[in-house]
Length: 94
Image (cartoon, rainbow, N blue to C red; front, side):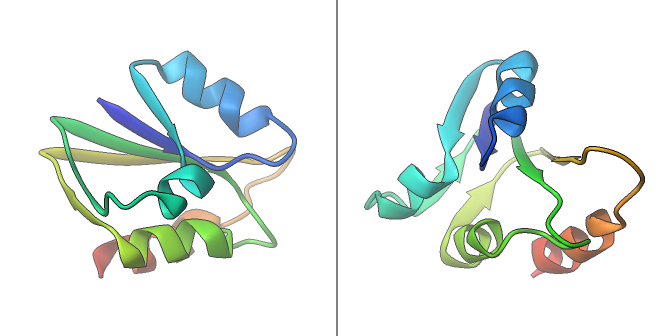
């Protein structure tokens, strides 16, 4: 399982570590020449920004191809439901 993460305060990194397996920083992956990833499962962990997916996560998904039998996303948020999962689903369906 590959888990791609973006974090600013460290909360999303801690969640990615708790999920386990191979964790990959989204900012570092954007700088990498590799733009295609495959595994049995691929996950994304990132904070909710103003009810949306952070731009850097959206950019990464748009510039990269993924192949897996199972995909998941975890959005961290410090309080109430942010509604950002709906925004992520629109991006991911592309």
